[in-house]
Image (cartoon, rainbow, N blue to C red; front, side, top):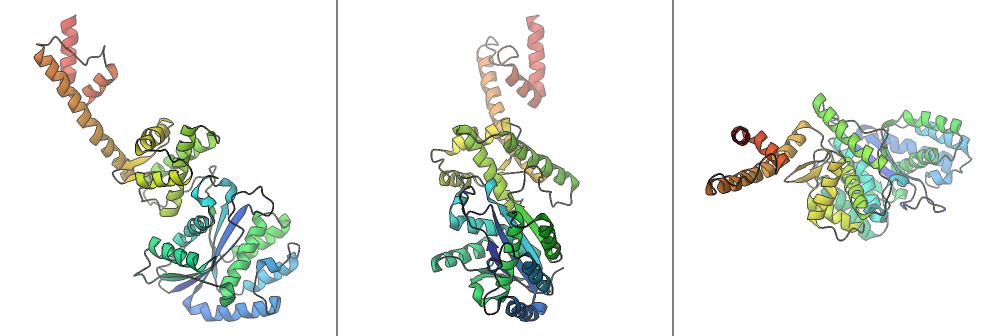
Length: 399
């Protein structure tokens, strides 16, 4: 159990543009958190300042201040940084895998949602942690980001906290910059493979968590549940989603675009918000509007989106609270309970209608039988054994 207070210093490498084919646009957006215990904090800051003086003189520690081809210099800096008593948590966002029409095409949304995956890991791992991120943009954006993170992770009355600062005021944010930039070098293939391996050897000694997002469809994420049945429920469900996306090409067809947008949003929220949360119909509807699907009513969302995905064997759980990728047996039970609450009353009404006609017509009007409505008759028989006896008697009478 991690009871000591910790501090995390966060910086990133890359830009937020999703147009990765444009010159100057990075393929990856890498975010790195440098984590120190309170006990080691002052010594880490002292050591990092000495490293800065040795390699950067009066400048900040910045990955961009080390040339792409200055491999030996970068390795020397990594060797010195290895002296720090820190750990690293990293997320590498593959921008080419993000839906181009998603709300993440906006810089502010990208920074908020993308970094939240890392913050979620930090706040879940450390009971008490203060996170300080490199400051972005205007004072208004700084304020909105701090408000967003504090509300999202319920930090208002918590022992943990979140804030932002200029990198020149925090030596460990500068260290995070250097690690993030080096990892980006590896992903962007800006160094020879052998050099990349040498970089990785230095980084792995400090690395405690590494997240690639979006999760690659060829390697579905693993459930964190200790219950083997829950794990199997999740693995089968998540694979059904990835199988659908891998076989469904990008299409201008409105119905396919709707289904793909809904599924990617559910997967995104599953990663970002946590596996236990249902996503309300209203929230999905708002997301669809934000990516240009403005004429989608809740009825179309259900029948043209969720229902069609289920027709393609994509497993989606639902409850009065919304929709989600099922992660446990209880999620499936929620879905079955919801279906039962809808189907059984309808079947009861149909039976009452049928019985009323049969009674009032002295048995001459049989609205539902195996000849006129075979599937419906089978459903009613399955739910009501007495109905089966009546149908068997009717068949005998005909003979």
